[in-house]
Amino acid sequence: MAYTVAKSAERFSKFAEFYDRVRPRPPEELAELLRQWVGKAEPAVVDLGCGTGLSAMLWEDVIGVEPSAEMRAVAARRGIRVVEGTGEETGLPDGCADIVTVSHALHWFDATRAFPEIVRILRPGGVLAAFDFDWPPAVDPEVDAAYREFESAHTALEAERGLRPAFARKEGHLGRLRDSGLFRHVNEVCLHMKETGAADRFVDFAASQGGIPALREQGVSEDALGLTRLREVAAARMDERTTWWWTCRIRLAVR
Image (cartoon, rainbow, N blue to C red; front, side):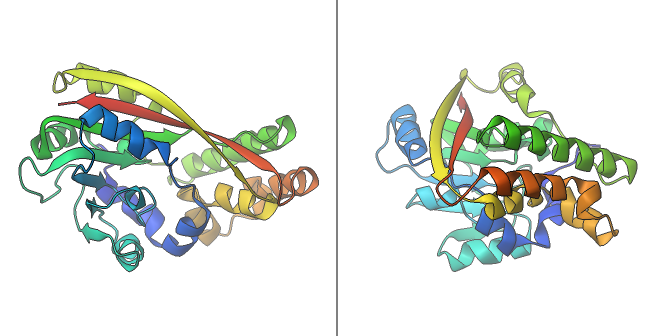
C-alpha cells in the first residue's frame, strides 16, 4: 500500500516547531523561475503537503494543503491560508492554480491518485514544481562522511523496528511524471544556495528526519543513532561562519 502524505503526517506532527526551526527554506530564485515558466507575474499557487509553510512563504497568493493539524497551526500563524487535505484529495476546486508546488513530499504521494488530482486543480498551461534538497548540504568530507554514517544507522534501525515506511524513491520522480502521460512537458532544473550555520543546527537538521523521534521514543540512544559521532565531527569542523552548500532539485511538469 502506498504511504501517503496523510499517513506520513504522523511522523512529523510531534515536532512541528522543531522541524520549522531547522529545515531549510527554498531559494528565492525558485519563485522567479516558476513565474517565468508559467508566464504570469502574480500566479495563483497551491502548496501541497505545505507543512509549516516554509515554501508557501515565497508567494503572496497561495493556499497550503496539509494533513497534519500541528503543521497547519504553524503555517496559519504565519498568515498562510491553509486547509486540511492531501495530495490525493485536496478538496480544492477545478482549475484553481497556475502553479502547484510540492516541497519534500512527493515521495509520500500515491502517484496514481495524486497526479490526476494535481492536473485537475491546475489551469491549462499550469506548472507542477516538485522539489527536494539534496541531503545533506555540502560542508566538507568529514562532516559528509559522518552524516552518511548517521543516515545508514538510523535507516537500518527504522527498518529493523518496523518504523521505515514504504515511499517512492526521489530519483524516480521525473520518470513517474513523464510516464503518467498527464503532462505535456516534464524537465528537471537545479538551483543552488548557501547558508551559514554551526554544528548544533546541523545536528538538529539531521535529527529532523521523520523516524528519529519514533526511535527516541523507543529508547534508542544518540550513540546508536549515529548522532553522537555526527555531533563530535561537526563540532570539530564547523562554527557559526561555516557555509552550507545546498542543491535544490526541481521537477517541472506542465499541464
